[in-house]
Image (cartoon, rainbow, N blue to C red; front, side):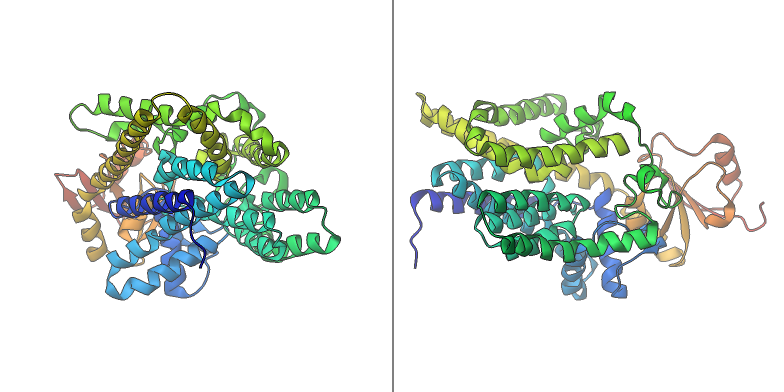
Length: 489
């Protein structure tokens, strides 16, 4: 049996601690936002044993590649017999598990490109990086995508091209832009001066696996990557108009760039306003210190940028592929979140490791190590605090969720001010408000003023709804539920 070297042991300890931190924080995370949609889909897949196409219970059209949702459906099904809470937690654990895989594979890739010591330093960076920790605790696709991406890249670097191709196909079945990996793998095969057989081994499995979903979406929606780039493909524009924001002017907006910067520092979805939800003594001071600490943690990346020259062409192509995807996304949607670019983090980890090596060669290296440990503890505690604050926001509404599930028909259609999080908690079809919406589109209307402070309902609609029978009111949470009047026009 192979004996692990000193730095290999250290790396195992770091990755294990990072994984346990992610598991622990996930225990406190209550699903919200996109995570609720993904879990709804996984629950639908388990219950119906089919992949949704256009289903009211999953919010209409289901278009994302389904690998992540299938994995969550399996995890959900394994524990559903122990109760809904156990099943939901099991589904959520898919993300930290794949996060651990991404940490391990990133370490192996950097070890192959450098040495054990640099790989160890890179493992420290990723294991405690706020954005990586945060995204490792949410039921989002992005961490699974990162793990699949790195697995494919690792096997291709190891000249196991068929395995690299299979994982490239699974990457494409996780998120659309997994197709970028094919070009990166082809470059590696080219650098290795392989014969045509190796190109086929790398590309063919990826093409067979990945193209199936593009073909499916082209048949269903008239666009292989629907709803993105719909202005180019002229696909279905009715089912989800929210993505039709294509404009060259999106590039001169500050929004996507500020979002990228703040999310890199660990701000949820790059939305600085979300920090206002945290309300405790000295919260402003603590949040400021947390943001400063996150920035300090990234400083070694700047110090180690010159080290990227060691594999300049590989890293440059890797970066440019994601930069091109990011540019298309900004053009098409007008925004960009860093979670879509997580697979770039090993490049930053490589630079951070060399930057930290430079710092450790200075005097007071032991003091620096102590300060780093303190900083890591503070950043990890901040992630736990974020998870607790987000979960606490929804705890107060549990009574409302239970009442709706117990007192409305399972096929009831509820018009929401908010979006998918409420639909997830009610387990009912949710209908989003549009001006002039017809009454035959919904059965109930719900008001959640503490969640949606700026109601999308116009004044005339509100006046009309308040003539309907009030069937539920919670004075503590300010939640009101109105039943559609049968006699009203």
